[in-house]
Every structure is written in C-alpha cells, then in structure tokens.
Image (tube, rainbow, N blue to C red):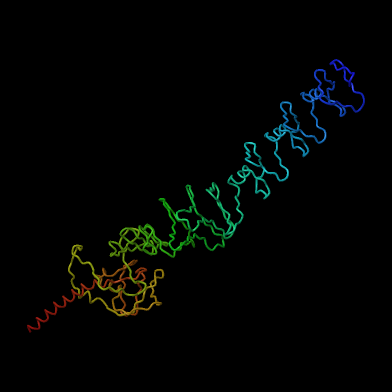
Length: 482
C-alpha cells in the first residue's frame, strides 16, 4: 500500500475480493462505524462497537442461531432474559433460574419430575410441601408424603397394616408405639402379639403397658370359639405372675362356662409361696345360690340354704346351728336323711345348776312310765312330699326299739317336753291305736318328723326306781312284822 496516505484523515480502501488486513491493525478514534440499530442480517459486517450498541443495551436481543453455546462465565443481572411461562412447560422449553423460581418455588406451581428422578441431599417441604388427595388405602405405587401418612393413618380412623410375616422374619413395631384413641386388632387366625428377648438377656423387662382410667385386656370368642387363653411359660426356674398393685385390682370372668384353671398353687394374700393348691389369707366365701362356706375371723359358717347356717367357731371346737334371719339357735340334724346313727366315743350334756331355774323334784315317775308303750319296729329315712311324710323305701330300714312320739305327747302329757314338733296345726288329742300296725292320722303334725329326747327319760327311770325301792322296803317291813 505504498503511495497511499497514512494520515488519520483519509480513508483506507481495499478493492477486490477477497482482501485481507495483515499484521496488527488498530482502529482508534477513527475506526469504522455502523448505523445498524436493529437485528443485523446474516451477511452484515459488525464491529465491536456495533455489537456493544446492539447487544449490550437493555432493549436489544442476544440471539444464538443454531447449536451455539455460552462459554466462560456469563452473568444475566437486572436485564437477564425473562419468560412468560406460568404453567407446565414443554420438554423443549429453555428455562432460566428466574423461570424456575417463578414456576417451582411459589405456592401455586407444581414440581414435576419425569421418568425415574430422585430428590438428593436434604430436601425440606415446609408449608408448601406437596399434598395429596388420597383419602383411603393407597395403591402400592402411590407416593406418600408425611402429610399423607398423618392424614390417612394418624387420625384414629385409618388402619395401620403390617403384611403377614413369618416366624423367621416377623413384622415388628419398634421403639415406643402408642395406640391413642383406637385399638390394636388382629383378625386373622393363629396370630400372636409377641415380645421377644434373646436368651442371654438378664435384666430386660418386656412390658405391655396401658395407662388410663379403665384399662382392659379383653378376649372375645366367636360363636364357635373353643378357648380364650392367657398363657405363661418359661424355663424350670421361671416364675409366672399376674401382678396387680392397686387397691381395687380385679380379674373378672363372666358367668356360664368361664374357667380359671391352674395345675399349680394359687395364693391370695400369702405372698409368693402358697402352702397348698389354694391358700387364702383373709375372709373367704364359696357360694352357689343360697349355699355357701364362709371363712372369716374366728368362725366358719356352712349353709345349704339361705334360711340357716352352721357355725364352727370359738377356737374351732364349737359347732352351732342358727337361723339366718334373726340369729336364733335351731335344731341340728345329723345323718337325718341317711337314716344312720352317729358314733361318739364320749358325750356330755351340760347340767350345771348355775344355768338352771325353777327346779322341781319329779314325782310319780313310775305312773308316768307306765303310760308309755315301748315297741320294736323298722324305721326308714323320711321322704318329704309336700305336707306328707313317707318312708323312703329306697334305703334300708333300721330295726329299733323305742317309743312313739305322738303316744308320749297325748298319753303322758307330763312328758310333752321331750317330744320335738316343728309345726303342729291342731293340738286336739288324737287317741292311740290298740293295734300298733294301724297308725292314726297325724297329718296335722307338720311336714317334719317329730323326735323324742330319750336322754330325758333317764331322770324318770331313776325316780321310778327310787319309788319302787321305797315300796319294796315298806313291803319287806310288813312281811317281817307278820
């Protein structure tokens, strides 16, 4: 380019095509300019000044045609690209961070992941965490948040389901599990609620704990149920215990066929070492209807009905029978229906003068005894049929000798006190029969057999003997004086 001016005021022109600048060329204040103010055509020549004017202002657009890339560190500050995308984007849309913030960090947008995507690191869903409309049992492929789980399973109305396990791989609740306001139910056959420790455990305690105003362990059998069972087992040195520590502790079983079965010893109030199969310290009562055996301090009461009872008291060697309604003493019957005697080694009848009043000597005892008609007979145990007393011929009768209670009562009225009658509706005298095999009608004598206190005949026998002795003495004197 010799011969061409090099001053700064002229124009450098290159004719021909192609032409090139070689070496280092500097365009200072007088470098070429351009009037391009909008998008250039693909064949336009753009200087750096053009680029800055067109693409760094706030109103122009930076365009990359084809597969182009931003390299290095590129910052989009206040004038970074924006987007009007406000809903679900298509797969080919280009998103800036502003787009992502607008679409996915607000409370109204949806976070969506296509394909097999994973949340990594620590992800926190606060007040705007994903929710679900699941209100019943979810499908196995459904995605559940804690909110779903709380709604479905933590409200008391849902079911927490554990799929059936095996003995080798059981399903387990771990840690502290609370069932509040509901119940733990097992509805399939042969299910077990187990608390298991290894054999090497020495101090751990398995506890099924219930805290409340009314705590129950309930067993309800079906209509075809055979057995509800509470089982305790262990090694040779294992002590099984049902422990209750409150004042009003209760083990309750309903009526009908409920059972409490033990092949060992049961103790109540005796600590951990009962002395026999049933060892009870304190008042004890066994009852069925009106019949009962009642053991309390200083006394044992036995009754076959609600009308009377027998008391074993005063050190255990006193046996008395009382009327239940008023505590009055009443007659005791021993071997009454069995029609058998009572064998005693020795008997004593109280006869202390300090407990007697209105004493009178017996007179004319011989005349009284002469009114009696001793007999022999076969006596049977009675059968009570309404107001009629009949012999119980199903039992063997006993051959006896004695007196007839009615004859004593009517024929020797001074001996009425030795005849015991439970209920007499008519006190009219009934004449005795001269034939002992023909019995008068004694139906007015009540529904219990009359009895005779033969012991009280002994004083009359003694007195009669004395009277006869006196008569013999007088007669002997008369004979001797003849």
